[in-house]
Length: 116
Image (cartoon, rainbow, N blue to C red; front, side, top):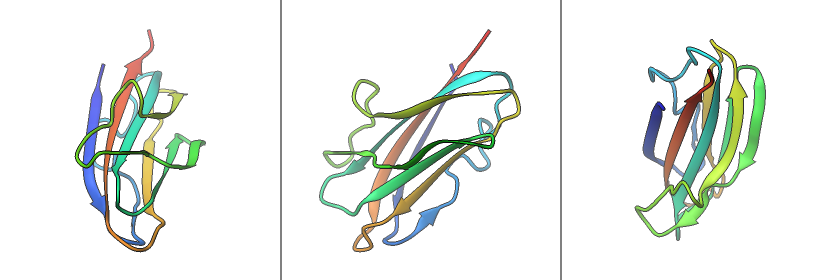
């Protein structure tokens, strides 16, 4: 099962257009189920995550779980959304810091479960 991890700090009021851009996992090679887990540090700003698979919006304005700094995401508690995609579909995950006051560390895990 392919897995993609991303860890970055989203500046106050900034947007990261697609954390999957340039990744070998950005486009699905075959039909798959995609699970997105995400966590942000407590005591920082507020991030919203959008998940698009091909031309379908799977999740919009999702808030990552707030956890102790530097921890997560955990598979048992930080699943935000999941969806199924066809071969060739593009995985897009956008992060937006909407609190506007401070940069926010965000960690994201993407699991790609290929279907037979």
